[in-house]
Amino acid sequence: QVQLVESGGGLVQPGGSLRLSCVASGSGFSINRLGWYRQAPGKQRELVAGFTLGGSPRYGNSVKGRFTISRENAKNTVHLQMNSLKPDDTAVYYCNYGTAWGQGTQVTVSS
Image (cartoon, rainbow, N blue to C red):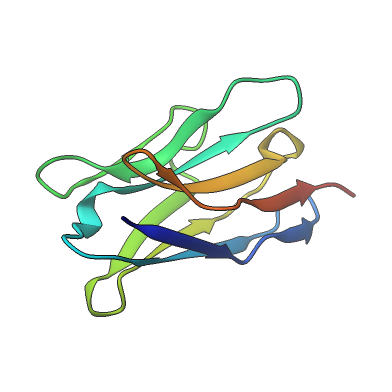
């Protein structure tokens, strides 16, 4: 079973940046299966970023060009660098691995 712990959320002004991190632990783990989702109030959970089967990054349409996912294999850690943040990016961000979810971290973009 995989355990996921997120960190790095907070309050930021429009145009600002934040970096989220997700540390995974467990056996039989494949870091390429880690991804980020988000859920805003009243909306469905949506994919933010993850990796293809080949290990290439993939992004939700609304964050392409602004967010970057990266990984530190030795630390079982995936990061999400979020730039040019907009109020519409406000949501709880979740790390995901198959059926496992982290506890979520709040990102609020507001002036």
